[in-house]
Length: 235
View 1 (cartoon, rainbow, N blue to C red):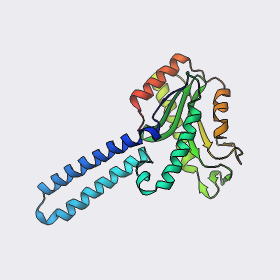
View 2 (view 1 turned 120 degrees about the vertical axis):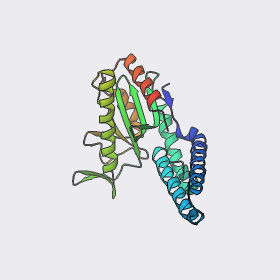
View 3 (view 1 turned 180 degrees about the vertical axis):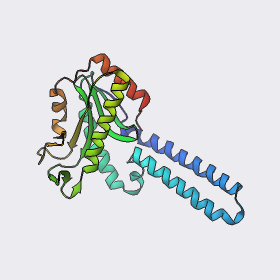
View 4 (view 1 turned 135 degrees about the horizontal axis):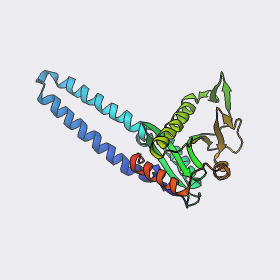
């Protein structure tokens, strides 16, 4: 069984408590400091400044863990997203013990949904819905009417960043493969876009297993996994 870290469906309660506690401490501390050094007529301004700071923190936390507030404000979408997350993780868990998987990890300010490291290479994974309506318009990827240009650009940025980190830290040339995984379909309208492989979830393990060797020794796989664990722990 693959080594796995950072399953959102198991750690969400702990993450929610941690972020909630941090936001409370920041809000109380900031409001106290502002009121101490302001006159009584500026209490409303102090409150507004505190709320603004809390909102910024909330935005940052949402970027690192998108399910954290959805569980309170959109429970239907939250449970649907969690079901998809568990479905994907169950597939990833079936990989062999030479595979290291990090879920919901923040890498140089970019969130990676799933990062797979194995002798066959490194894979950066992003999930979408059915993938039945994928199309390219004006050289940009769309899922029906929804643009996926941000997804595709971010995947490649993350892959290049990982490549730079590995080249600098381990003196190796290893370009990760960006993957878009369609969760709810076995048939796709498009299987490749700008070097990004697009596969149904049912074919994910087969694609990674059949991928040509990425030139990573098992020792190097372990070294990279340890570096990721220590420096870019899951959110």
